[in-house]
Image (cartoon, rainbow, N blue to C red; front, side, top):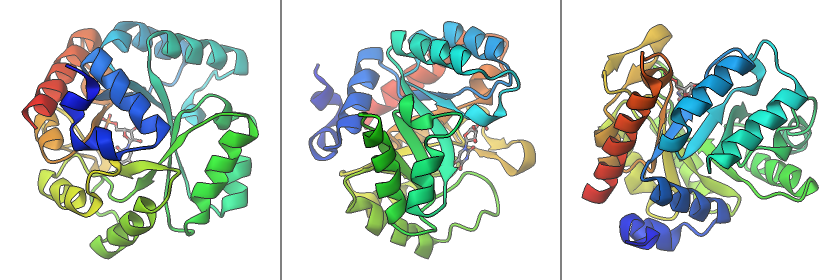
Length: 264
Ligand code: 5BU
């Protein structure tokens, strides 16, 4: 079986280089799991990566929540992630005007130099995507932007009208890899997929085998249902890193997501 056999129209219609890279990695590793590596120390991050690296397709970071961050430590961490054949996704949720977002991709963390994917709100208008793409090009790299069309947290202000505007503008933009959808509500996700069509990806946080409410307004839905509803990548954090056996849990999420893709 080749990637196009499992991804179907998504493979044919998602033309961005980063989309093809992700679908290939997911196919190679038989996993649609992106680990939300929300650990506060470099040693904690390394430990987690060594445990779950073989079972995931992408690694989502929040570079600004690490207590002992250093450029050298981070370079080593990213190199290790690449050895595991992982895409690196900084969930920065950029929201400023295009030129400032471009500059924020540089700075002390220099996100443009190691990320393959970043998140952005479209609240400031479509030029943010050009700003982020320009930042990658400034260092001779390629990347993909995921726009927030939905969020998993309760009471968020992303209305269906707002979602539709994000999808309409994002779908027409070559620098957009796809959209963030709400993994905790399969019916909302299905609606989003109907709007998006096959030409862009949908990645979904708010996924946990233990469905229901999480901490501080987080909500969780089932991994299989998210993929059946149209998610291309399940973003799982505490479901994996807070378990007693992260490797076994990552494997379980990988199998659930991969089987759901085959079923879809
Ligand atoms: P959790 O431990 O599985 O709840 O972690 C979820 C991660 O996904 C965490 O890093 C959040 O920043 C991220 N996230 C989210 O939970 N909901 C959203 O709508 C978006 C990102 Br966008």
